[in-house]
Length: 414
Figure 1 (cartoon, helix red, strand yellow):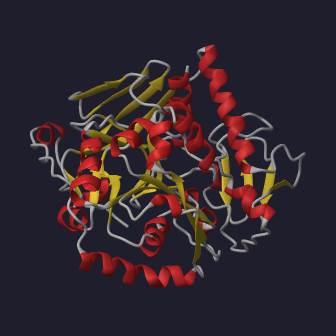
Figure 2 (cartoon, helix red, strand yellow; figure 1 turned 45 degrees about the vertical axis):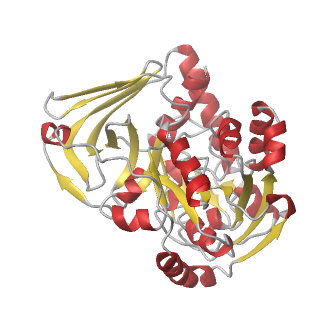
Figure 3 (spheres, helix red, strand yellow; figure 1 turned 180 degrees about the vertical axis):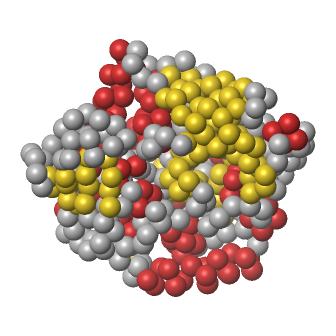
């Protein structure tokens, strides 16, 4: 999937009026049927199946439907599993160049990791006035390493405001088929899913918000590399390690960063020449050294601990040249020029566009960072900004996206 882009000077983009807020539309029956029809070949290709259990207390709806987020296939899975019309909370860039179509599909645009108080009003309007369920991906971003992305706190406040059942859809195999780091290359993996009632309106009313957070954390505690290994899911494609350096950016042998490369089934550090192989069950096996981490999420967790140590010691910072895109309406991604992105314990500073652009974002702005790989087939991206404008920064430095997201999360926690 691609996005409409327009080259435009920064000062002209600032003069573009922001789009008016529009209340959620009831999903078009015809478009909903078309999505199901167009999704069928992909779902047949993965031999998709699903189970439904513990739905007795959910009632007839509307529901708030939460789903883990692994790949684009998730939307097609939802179209098969959800029995009644539903709105979809989606990132605002998903409406660029196709706003009318996406709104008639029931999309409710919001900005990832940006405070949006109007979203609660929109969700209440959808379930209360439209009488439609709402599908939401609370992780707000694809998983990098096959484990849950950090969830926002106090989701129970939203649940109590909506006063509807919370239903959970959990997928199995979607990440293994199309992990984000792998450049949109699909693997042959069977995909399944499970739908169940997570919380009834009565349980939501009775439970404190912090207990609801605990229930959500438990529901989103998964490890898809572990699942692949334990269920003996063989992935034989010869490109399974392509792009793995995006998440395994730091060598545990020589500690070098940005020197690793995943290609084919091989993974190498070009600094110390340590070589690994990714086997058919997703395990990392060192070929010319001791295996430090065979399980990819363990490697990623170690990188997180290293970032945390660097922050505490005052040694963490990011400095990279970037190409800058902006979204201020739903008409296009406006490419406004080049600049520099800096990040440290004090937050982000973005400068560029021949000195016209200077934007700062403090460390308490949000608990995580909208970041992605091969975003709309343009490149790896780090997004910062506010409700008025979003800056999509495409780093020129190698493999800094994962580390930046980790750093944002760790700084926020501190």
